[in-house]
Image (cartoon, rainbow, N blue to C red):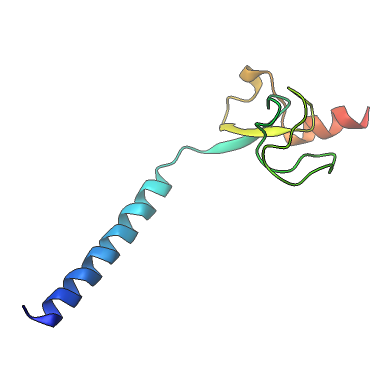
Length: 92
């Protein structure tokens, strides 16, 4: 076989995969942070109070400073709060 044909076919395959993965990322639904709905050990990243900076470190269910990503526009219906609402609730 011709080595140039093999090399160009491999390059075309890699480029095609890159285009496909970019297209699927663009199709992903919009998400937002929803505070107060995360279960213990099931939070997404750090909390508002700064006691940890990693996912999965919530110590109790539904803490007002812990958050999870949810589909945009569904947070309120799940009983959660936006970041601003959660910050205000923590100050009280």
